[in-house]
Length: 282
Length: 262
Image (cartoon, rainbow over all chains, first blue to last red; front, side, top):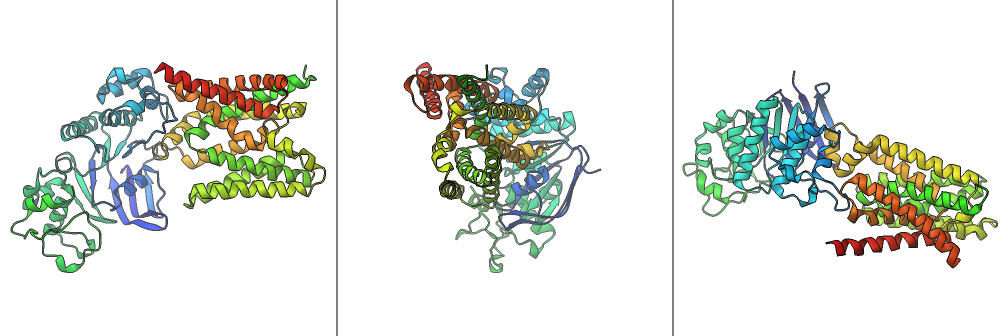
């Protein structure tokens, strides 16, 4: 059975709807990546699925006894709260010292950091400790919200490599938000393109067969753009309302606030990707 | 032994200090200092209403402080600017309370004891209340400790593990009202926040874990209670402010020591 099933999910805060009509099911062991422009509701969806935010409509069903290992986008620890790495790894449940040592070793957190204050860790170390804590929950599903933000390219590649290895070792599902194309394409079983609702979803194979995708591959953090192109090629859906970035859609109203600027030398369909990619979000 | 008013005062000071310092760590970590202030100011209104309706004062204070704390929590969830809401409510409660007390001819004379405390007049039943309340608070903290800590660290992290952060916050709100009700006789409404914040702040530079901070804060509170009462005895000053003065001196010494050690 599915780990989490959402039907017609609606969510928002402060009276503002961020998500409408989201249908989604997460299966054991799969890696699913959510992509979408800024403000498309990626984090909101993840928070709803993690149980941190109550949906305002629709149904959300979790498998009984589901354990979630949650890695938030950023974790601010108030400077008045003293917290060593070991103490942090014992939240919310006390863990055996052997289990903690294993989780630290698995995520590449050096033993010497065990007694260090969380506030003194580097960005990369902090992310690994967050992941180690999530692993100690013995999760059925790992949820990561842009877990590699602030890491350089090799560090973030190594981080996702680690996620993939862990998935195979403990058989958990992974649901993550990412901006990084190479991650979306190489490490996901399924990709969900979100813009207030689910625009499209599918395997990366389907996505990578698009010529525009090939042109874009490796062009840094343009993963979301690549998916819009794919969607345009296979199943055009006007109601989807996102920017296909092919220069032909200037007439139909860009009201959805993509972080995307059309330059005067805007690309044409026959001259698609690289230049365009360079103009996108940076 | 309990017939000696000084011994009763000492026991009351230590009991209130322990309870307030333990809860105070959460007040500091969650940045609830002004929240504590507003709740404590509401206690004056509670005193006035209790005296007016001839009800037991601690009960009246507990209820009014709780209503205040729940009102603030509800308003903050609606996205009101917290700073302003707290400023309005804290002083509204204080002003209403002071006016209400003025209508009670007998109570007028006692006003100072509710604003600044009157630890030397602590009765045996006050003592039972203080230690009963502190014991209740300690048991609750021990029971919810891991959940409270996780929710304080990050509400989303807690929710993903099946902890309801709003429930834990409600627990802290109740605990705050309880501590206010226990403390008003000892340090008075105006200085309760000091008893919450200062021991925790003094402990912070020397603590590496939350548990250590709690233990050190409790130690600071006990030393302050004993030292403050001694100070009040020697200098013939009011006991509540003397206890707070002692805590502030420990805080200052701690800050200097932490600087020197670095």
